[in-house]
Length: 109
Image 1 (tube, rainbow, N blue to C red):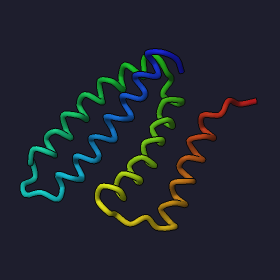
Image 2 (image 1 turned 135 degrees about the vertical axis):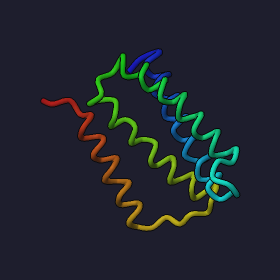
Image 3 (image 1 turned 45 degrees about the horizontal axis):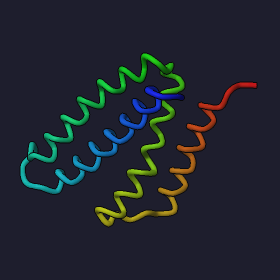
Image 4 (image 1 turned 180 degrees about the vertical axis):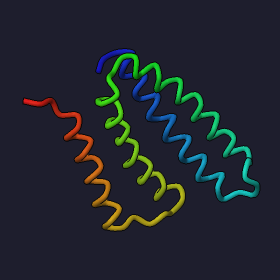
């Protein structure tokens, strides 16, 4: 992944992360469509456009496993920002998800 493809991937990852964090923050507020949730949905809309641009450059079978990189970031920030617990099970699941993503991205011999 080079140049603009990498930029699109990182942007997609960061938008996904921002949307998840805003949705979680908004979930604890009054009203279903409070400003945080609305902003999260707008971010998801922009992220969808970025994802389509990314898919123009990378096959879906290789692109989608890359999205698994957002999971450890969400887990880390959910602990840091929302004081959510991390269990051995969630860490083991994270290792499985990342390991699966790695296996899917590996080049066949």
